[in-house]
Length: 255
Image 1 (tube, rainbow, N blue to C red):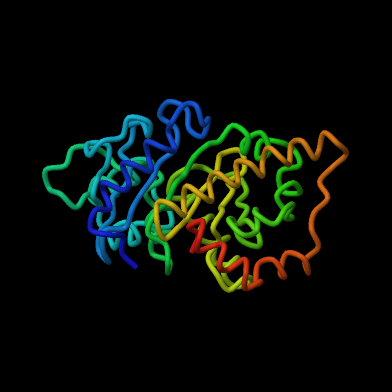
Image 2 (image 1 turned 120 degrees about the vertical axis):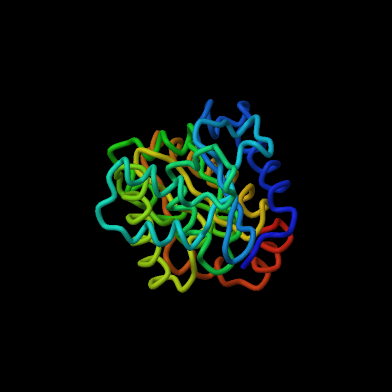
């Protein structure tokens, strides 16, 4: 699947929104975003740039096949990662270096129905992901709108070194998720790191990010009141498959 022809314009708007300091989703240079252009290339945030001040110079056009090929290298050194990112640039005159997370963006953008990625470090979400009970805390669903916007479950990835190693860990967990749920995850949570929202459109990414930020705040409050009361598996499946909820997904902009 490809993003619309004005993918860069849409990506700039999404990035500025996610990087708005008032939202506390990404501080200073945190986070990165990407958008699929076509079957061969995608835009990704350059290393050292900021989401809040995104403009055309913030992004680098890279080759999807080259990045995916580099991801197959089992023992990329730090120097090898940098070389792979430099060689992945699709424009010969480009100087900016793609984000070190370009590898995981490439993998996720290769999935069906994924054309935009928003990776942020929300304060509320990281309050959960940096806790000793992170895996337990994100193992269930709390309320219907969380299911409608963020899917029946999250994909949880244990902490690992950012870059190609993390991308391979994400790929492994996502493939397990797809086998279990027969769909790609909308929310990927990386322990001690942050949130990834994967969507068909910028609105998908915005909706998913906003709702999971709320979920994290509800989780923290639930633990303060004795612990979360997760919905039953049957209730989650019912909400996830109800026809009226499918209609509501379309209305609020979720694939």
